[in-house]
Length: 307
Image (cartoon, rainbow, N blue to C red; front, side, top):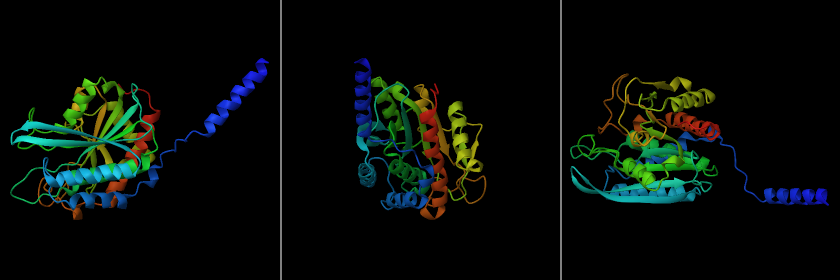
C-alpha cells in the first residue's frame, strides 16, 4: 500500500512538472547590437531629455511600452523634489521579469539613467550619456524576460542640475534605494549592476574603485567567458554615479562605464557637449557590453551571496 501511494505521488508530481513553464537559459550571444542601437536612436529622436521635460516623459513612455511588449511587469516611481533649479518631477521606470519574488539575495538589478543633462547653451542629445546604456538595458530585457528575479531600472535625475553633491544629482537612484529601505526590501537585492556611457566606438569599460570587489571579479569572469576581456579594466579612483546609493545601503554594486569619451585616447571632450551624437557610438560596443552583462547575470544567478 505504501509503495503504491509513493508511486501515485511521484506520478502527480511529474504531471505537475509537465505543466510548469521552463526557465530558458540566457543566450548571451543572442544580444543584438544593432537592435540596441535602434533603441538608442529612438531615445535620441526625442532630442534633449532633461528631467521634468516633455521630451523625457516621451522617452519614459517608450521605455515602458517596450518593456511591456517584451513581457515584463512595469512600475513607475514618480516624485517631485526640490532642486537648485526649483521643484522638478522625476520618474523612474522599473521593469520586472514575471518570475520575480521577494526573498533575501534573490533580485539582480540592472540600472541605467535615461535623462540628459539640462543645458541652455547647446543642443545636448546624449547618444552615449545616457542613450547607450538605455538601449543596452532594453535589449537585455527582451532576452532575459523569462528569467526569474531580474529588475531593469531606468533612473531619472542622475544628472546634476548644477553641481553634483549631497543635494544635487542621483535623484532617481536615491529615491529608489530609500523606497527599498522603507519597505524593508533592500535585503532582496543580490547585486546591482549599473551601465553608463557604454556606446563609445573606441570602447574601454573601467570599473571604478567604489565598486564591490567580488562583483568586479564576476564581471571579469563574464568578460572572459564572452571573449571580451580586453574591453574591461579597473580604475583606481571613485566615480559618483547611480551605484553609490546602493553601496551606501550595503547592497553590492558595480559601475560599468567608459569615461574616456573623446576625440583622442585619454580625452573626455565629447562628454556633456553637443558632440555626444549617434555617429560617436557603435552597435558593436553596445553588443560587447550587452553580451557581457547577460553572461554576468547568469553567473550572479548561480553565485552565493556577495554581501
